[in-house]
Image (cartoon, rainbow, N blue to C red; front, side, top):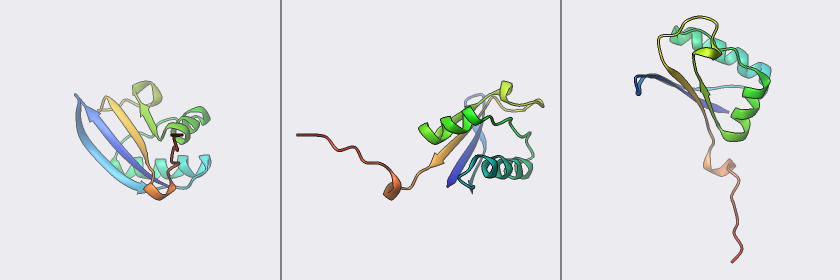
Length: 94
C-alpha cells in the first residue's frame, strides 16, 4: 500500500512524501513512525478507529489533537494512493 503524507500550514503544502507501508495496523504504525522521523516531525497517535477510517475512505486528516508533542503545521493529511486496477468499480443499471 502506498501512502501520501501532506503537511499543511496556512492552507499551503509545506512538506509531502510518498512511501510504501504494510497493510496491517501494526505495520502501518511502525512505518509511519519511521517516515515521521525522516521528515523530522512528531509521530501521531494512530488509533485503530483512525486506521479503519483510512482503510474505508482512503484519507485521514490529523490535527494537533492527534499529536502528543507540539507541531509546526496545521494539518497532516494521509492519503491512500489506490492504483486504478485495484479500485472497486461501480456498475450502474441501465
